[in-house]
Amino acid sequence: MQAEPPGTAGRIFSAVALIEAITWAGLLVGLYLKYGSGTTDLGVQIFGWLHGGAFLLYLATAFIAGARLRWPMWALLLAVLAAIPPLLTLPLDYGFRRCGLLSGPGQGAGRPQR
Image (tube, rainbow, N blue to C red; front, side, top):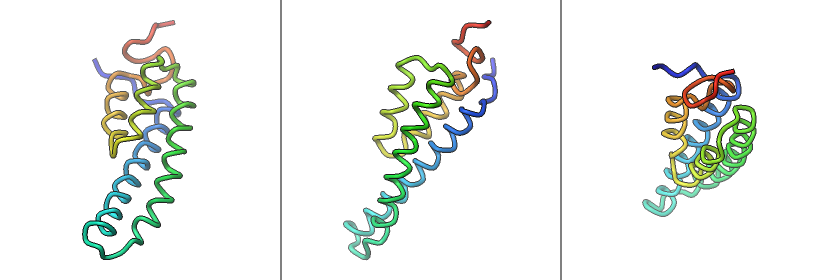
């Protein structure tokens, strides 16, 4: 059974999850350049700010999407915790998409039909 396509809140959550992961990757590269190779700290300066903003935007988006899409508490907790380890928002988004948590309320797997 195929999950319903994501609604507006689901698409916004997916986009912000991708942005959060990209800025995490940029920060990791910047950390390597600063501490691993010792060449420059410019990557940390740039991606530190970008990732900080993306992290806060992701958390706000997770709470808003969770409320609009009526996620169970475990899904909201997973979404928040996924922002901490690097790049975990991407597999979380994939899993949420597969089980229908990014579809509108009342649609997708595990949702009561009205």
